[in-house]
Length: 192
Image (cartoon, rainbow, N blue to C red; front, side):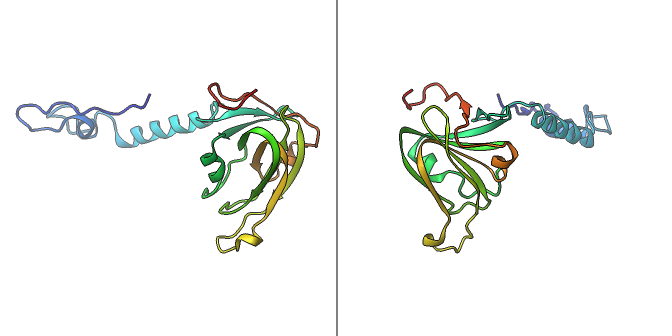
C-alpha cells in the first residue's frame, strides 16, 4: 500500500507550519532545528529503495521463469493483443534478469520484429509444454530511421515466446529441446 505524509492541522496562531514542512523546519514553534535532518531523511529513503531492489523479491507484475540451469528471470506477461503489439518497444533497456513472455492461445507460426526496440534481444520460441523449438541470439536493435523492410525479424512456430537480455542464451547455455518452466497468473484467458 502506498504511503504519504498527511498534513497536520495548522495551529490557531498560524506561527509555525504543519505536516511535511513542519517535519523539516522544526518540531515546535520554539525549535530552531529540524526534528529529522533532511540529509538523514533522504539517506533513509535511499537505503530503503536500494534494500528493496536487492531483496530478491520479484519486480511487480512479473512471473518467475526458471531456465534449465536453475537461473530465474522475472518476466512480464504479454497475453493481450495490445501488450503483444507493444512488447518491449520504446524502452531504453532490459535489465539482465528481466524478460517478456508472450503467451498465445494456440501453437502457430509467429514472426517478431525489432521495430522501436532500442537494444539487442535473445528470443526463445517455445511449444505448449515450454520446450524450446527455436533460439535466436542477439537479434539486433533497429535504429529509429530504419525502413520497415530492413528491420530485423525472426520467425518460427510457437505457443510462447520469451524475449530476454542479449547474451542470455549463451550465458545460460540454452539449447533447442530444453524446457523452460513458468506458471501463468491465475485468471489468464489462455487455456491449459
